Structures are given as C-alpha cells and as structure tokens.
Length: 640
Image (cartoon, rainbow, N blue to C red; front, side, top):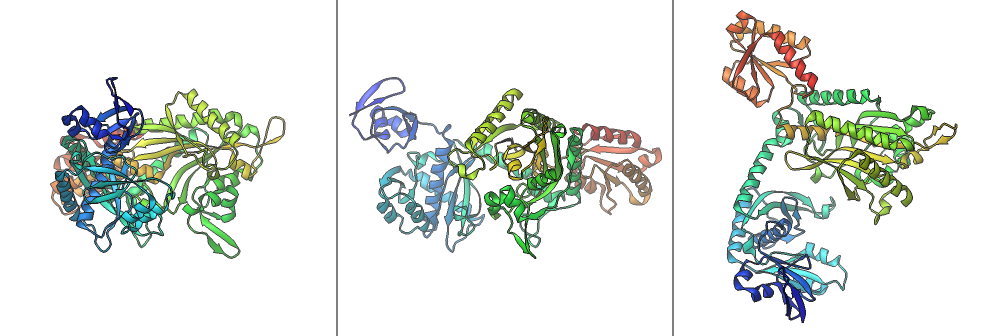
C-alpha cells in the first residue's frame, strides 16, 4: 500500500500501482470524465501511469496553464490523422514549440499542398469525435524496435537509446508513437486546433539527411483563444518584413545571385544609409574611431583568433589561391585585433574605441534563412573597445547607456537583458580556464547590479571567448530577436599578444569589449519594418514627399519648382507624372506609405501654396512651401 495526499490535506491508503485515472474514479465518476492529466509530487503524470510511491496527488481538469502538454498531444493527434490518410508515412519528431507544435514527416511519394491541410484537419476532428483514450506503455528496446519496424526514423531514434533503457510508447486507437510524454488522457480534450503551414526540414537538422515535410499547427484551450491567436497571425502577415520589403521596394533576392544574399533596392539603400549616419554620429560623439577593413581574410588570421577551430562549420569554404588560403569573414574582430597591434599603445589612450559598419558572411542552413532577418551576407554595426581591466565597469556602463539611448530614440520598450554564460558541463566549446571565466562572469553581474538593470541568465549562450550581455527584443510578429550585444573578452588579446604600456612603463594585456548596438543592419531593418508596419518616421522614410499634380499640362512647371526646392533642402521627394486618375495616384502613394503627399491644383499654383495630405489621414492642410520645409526639418531633427 502507498499513501496519497490530496490538495485538501486528506490522506488515503491505496494499492501500489494505482493510476491517476483510477484515483479520480474513486473520488467521483464526473471528476474522472473531466480529468485531463495529474500531478504527482508536483510533476505532470499521465492519468494511465502507475503511481509507485507515497505521493502528493492533484487532478488537472483545465489545460489553460498546460500549453506544452496540450500542443504536444495535438502533434500526436495530427500524426495519427496523417497516418490514416497516408498509410506509408513515417515520422521524425513532433515537439511542442512556443506557440504550438510541429511534426516532421516523410510522406514518401505524396506531397503536402495548401489544399491538403484542411483534409488533415477534418480527419483530426473525426478522431477527436471518436474520443480515443491515450495510454502510456513501457516497453523494452527490442519491443520498441518491433513496434516501429516500418518506420526508419523511429528505428534510428530507438537504436540511439541504451539497451537497458525503459522506453515509453503512447497509444491512441490504432496509432502508436514513441515519446517521453506526458499527454492528455483523451483526444476529446484537443478540440480547438488549427494547422498553420508546412515547410521542408532536414532530418535532425543535418543538410546531409533527407528533407522531411514539417507541418506546423497550434492547439488552444477554447474557441475564443484560438480565434484571438488566428487574428494575431493575420496581423503578423500584414507586418511580415518579407512581404512589405517587396511591396515597398526595399530589398530583393534572386536564386541566380544566391540564396540568403539580399540585394538592397534604392529605397532600402536610403534606409541603410540613414541608419549608418544615425549610429555613426552617436558613436562619434562618444569618441569612436571609424575604420574600414576587408571582408576577406587569410585562414591563418582565423586560426590565430580561434574562429577556425570553433566556427569554421558556419563559415564559407576557404579559397586556395597561389600559396595562400582565404575565407569570407564571419565577423571582423580579428581584423581589429591586427589593426590595434600595428601600433604601440599607452594606458593614456585607453579605452580605444574602433568601430566599423562591416560586411560579414556566414553559411546559414537553407532552412534557417528568413528574409533579411537571417541571411548569409549582412552588415554589422560593430565595435571593439580596448581597455584596461579596471575600465571594464565604466565601458560596460557606457555601452549599456548607449543602447538604452538608441532604444529610446526608436521607441523600443519590449526588451530584456540576457546575461549569456558558459555551460560548465561543456567547457570544450570555450577558450580559457575556469578561473578566468568565473572572473569575467562575476564582473558582468557586478556591472549589471551597479546599473540597476533587470536581467536573466542563459547558460550555454556565451561566445566561445567570453560571456556577453544580449538585448532580447520581442518583434511585432512574435519573434524573440537579439538586436544589441556587449561581450567581454580576455582571450583574443592573449591570442594576438596585444599590449599597452602601463603607468610603470611595463607591457600589459588589454581587455576587449565587443559590442554591436544596432547589431546586424539587415536584421535591424527587418525589425523596424515589422515594428512600424512599413510606416517609417519622416527622417527614415525612403521617400518623404510624393508630389502629385491634378493636371500635368497646367501644373507640371510649378511642381518642378517645388521639387527643385525640396531637393536643395535635402528632402527626399518623388513625383507622379503618370497619365492616371488623381484618386488612383493618391491611393498608390498611401500604399507606398509615403509620409506626405502634396497635391497641386489651380489654387496652389495661383496662390503659390501647397496642399498637404499626411499618410493615413483624410484631411488636408494648405500652407506655403517654406512652412512645410521647416516642419520636415524639425521632424528629422527629432529623429522621431
């Protein structure tokens, strides 16, 4: 016998091996019908799992707070539906993810299309209506191999387990799946779901393996919750930088150029130029020295820095030319180390701040490429600050304050600081000894404490050469994006034998603080597009003013004079001189999200005025051109 303690404090003796469902039935049949899953000593348990020891016991009858269990169970429900529709299907893995679930499936000769998803949903609904119980089974390795003898992916997973390991299998009707669980007690609790999309995914994320079909979905606790989430997804589609980037003529891709290699169109180039000017001006005010280094380097440069040993799998292949080997750089810190080393430095020069808008290249997996948010060629707002050990605190504070200043300028509010630390159980990934890492990490904690900045810690997210402070910001479409980063580095100065002369005239090692404020300009632009829905502030808008004549024949000459005046005042203006109806031109300017439209008719020409319509507003204002120029200049000055 074992003792079971209930939430009200009562204790009951029961047979060892009793299940949670049997316990629920012993209380009341109505409770058993509502029971979804249970907690044993605070841990989630399947209702069919035997309870083998004295335990605190709680029945769960609402999935509201158990999103992961609900969605992982729904992944199995979808897999069962797929198996009934496509009997030859084989299955990889089907985890719950942040907003739902996915399952990687080998459909053989069959292909998933947009038309197939509703068919799978319909089959899922029919399985829910059958109210099939989900049962947990414990099997040996040999038994598991026999159960999944027709699925090469499950066989591979099982063969990777120890021979004596107890394996769990979940059964619902005729469908069985290899899984650790736990799961809901019955598919009837999975009523509110939606299949969202599908894509290709390499088995185990390895490009050498077969591409499987990954089907995404979500499961919610109620119809209202599901409908609300689907509304959010529609809003995200409206904000998707890939769609808006094409619509607004910001960037493009072409497979002939290469996957993951963006080409910036005229509108996109203006945005990038303005962002570069903005951040470089801020850096200049803080004493940064801007440089330019080549986007290619000798392999020996990266062997010296350690990137070759720790990062070469993410780099483009090396190029052997004459008696040298070159590689496209994944980051530019090695170039800056060499630049620092080229001169003798005194402690009086430190901190020395070297900054660059640098072109970098990383061979991201095809499945990871996401518009300009994740590419194979990008530009970083990068800097390396060479300082003495006792300057670390002040440098970190200075950089953190710069980040906060930039975020205030752009109106960013939904962000968190993440202290990224070394994984002590996997030290082979990192340079340096335990003492140095502990020293670096404690220094960063102390700096954050002094700054009064809220942060959370992430084990295993450090750079291979040192801990870092990342700023994680939530994008308007729900992505968790790293925009800014500050990294502490004792390792590269050692590897490049960097020195400075201290007060006593002795050579000492500097410390390097790596930092990126806007981070990747490409990712930052993607974030901005989605944050603003493509409605850029006046100072950043590719075209600030669209000039539209009512009648081209009678009003063009006056329009041309206005264009000349605006351009002399560095205001970005374009004209619409096409033979189209006025209403059509105005609507198109709205579609292009241009901040201001100037409509010129007889009255404007005769009175030397302009008629101003602001984006998204119906009302217009008549003013003289000098007032308008002053207004634009003021908005540019505010950077808002």
